[in-house]
Image 1 (tube, rainbow, N blue to C red):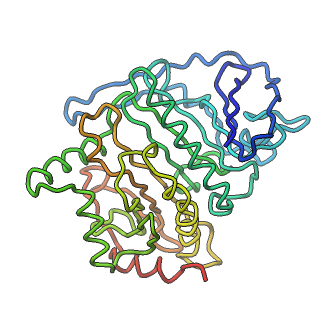
Image 2 (tube, helix red, strand yellow):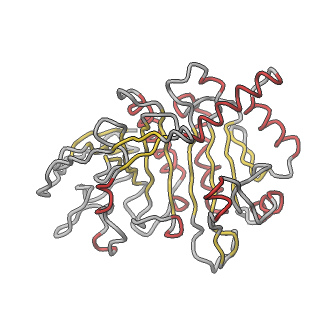
Image 3 (cartoon, rainbow, N blue to C red):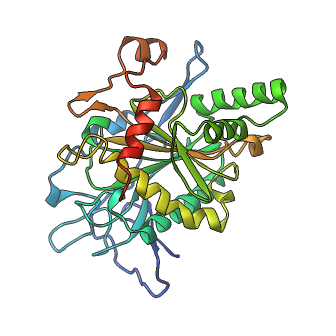
Length: 347
């Protein structure tokens, strides 16, 4: 992997990731941009213990532009872009409208391809590996920033999820606090250790492998299964078979196998509701150990992939119980969801 670091016209960092060492990136951003001066505010909810980021400047962010004005496509003559090169493989840049900014974290955009019509599932295994390497590199860089406690890599796909730019991309958040979901998982890890003397993630993966009914895909280095108490209609958790706390700790064998397994999962998701249906909206979320956690080796890196679509013409809305009380109700048995995801495996 070759990494080329430069800056955009307003001073934001831009990083190209290429598979070949002989690629040269020299294009300069010609836009007359003023420096970004946005600043987020982190407020503390005393009732729940949650942190809430207030970022009012995001109200003016780009929203569903036409394809010929996509800011994530490569720049062309007469068309400016966030990426000044005429083509790229994988690129990362600081978000111009960040939720976290001004010394309270950082938000970055990751573009998986310069093809406006492609999705992550359309990538080659070589490109999928390059994205994994970019995620890993940014995790290392962002975790070293002052005040950063947790790094979160994720992808939102589809208007149903709330995506405002259809070009295939993800984001990376460097949080100045431990997120509520991770804090809860941390407590459960400790409770399980006290009760059994064992690791929660090790026992979870062992149980799913032994049961096998909810396992949808397994390789030498990765195992994917629908969780026993899935929150979402179709939800898959992808774990390395050797527990590690973060992307940095994956060995070469796990890195090499990841694109094959993950691309197959994404392609199956697009076939769940049939070939004639629109692409399946989803969220893909990497869960990594907080870098400030003294017992972070107990955490198990994993990716959670889920969709809000429960049928070809129906969505799973977070209504009164979920939004109001955090009490999830699932319309599909996890075992039935796993069966369907196995049925649509690639030939």
